Amino acid sequence: MLSFSPPDITQAEIDEVVDTLQSGWITTGPKAKRLEAQLADFCGTPRVACLSSATAALECALRLLGIGPGDEVITSAYTYTASASPICHVGATPVLVDIAPGSYEMDADALAAAITDRTRAVIPVDIAGRMVDYDLLRATLEGAAPQWRPANECQEAIGHLPVVADGAHSLGAVRRGLRSGQAADLTTFSFHAVKNFTTAEGGALTWRGGMLDDDDAYRRLMLMSLHGQTKDALAKDKGGSWEYDIAFPGWKCNMTDIQAALGLAQLGRYPGLLERRHRIIGMYAEALADAGVTMLQHAAGDPAGEGFRSSGHLLIANLDNRSRAFRDELIDRLAAAGVPTNVHYKPLPLLSAYRDLGFSAADFPESVARFEDEITLPLHTLLTDEDVCFIAEEFCRQKRQMEAEGLR
Image (cartoon, rainbow, N blue to C red):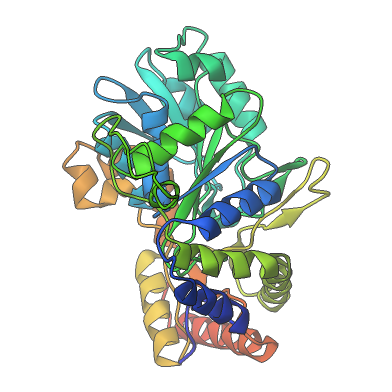
């Protein structure tokens, strides 16, 4: 049985973690700060704040923007709950928008129609590691929100309806010359164990340059992540520096040096990991060309020009003209043959928590239709070429067998 998405851990990560354990410094410290600096350089952004998860990063982003009760925040109906739950955490109202036909991105017309005078941010989702069309998104917002007015200094510094990207999948992606982290006003990343780049658990928040006071924004995020305490353990460790204050009742979502140690080793290997993912995607595309599936495109044109190149996080495919029952049966048969698969994602209106908030699947037909025939094949850097060939061959064999049985 192959693994669906195991972490790619080598001796480099082990050595870095052991060094941390032997250093006597295992919570937020010098390695966390070093990882932040290296990630900012990788993304081409002024600062990065490493945190305990992408969910925490998104919540901190909304709090940095001063978003709370009485405000509305728009996101996609086709995503994981972590894109929407932080909206609820800060007391704002989530507004869901359907995806465009044949796409995994929010429908521009539906997005425009969802904007009101209470809209305070939009959260697009870079599903599978492919950055959304941020040019189209900004044009839509400019046309639909001329009445937008900032509610605080942070929003005023941004100067328009803020775009907070859920880039959980897209670290390392590029579109029209901009890296993930540079296209949206703020961008969150996930470093969970199943992600391309992992710190076991963890995430980060970054933002584009030229709008915020970068040092002040970083300081505020660090306060949020550690109870509002004005000195972290690293600063207090200096002789005679025990004194601190609590600026506000904050939260607890800091990244430890043990996690950062994993990240430092991963980042050194990351360009090679990205290349390997795209090599595997190319193999799948060739092997499944006549299999009756539509694969999400991960690269087109020159990413420094008008094209894009994803981070290659997920191998998402839609089974052309097949039912949800067919998809589910195929998943079961592949599992029995040793091929693990998954579904990304069950749209939010199909989940109890969001039905309880008043959302109905009937209002999001494109998201439901996209979900019902979606299947995700294994895509990770521990797969060999032989593994990929086996997965593709077994996929085609099982699908043909089901069709021969008259299943649709």
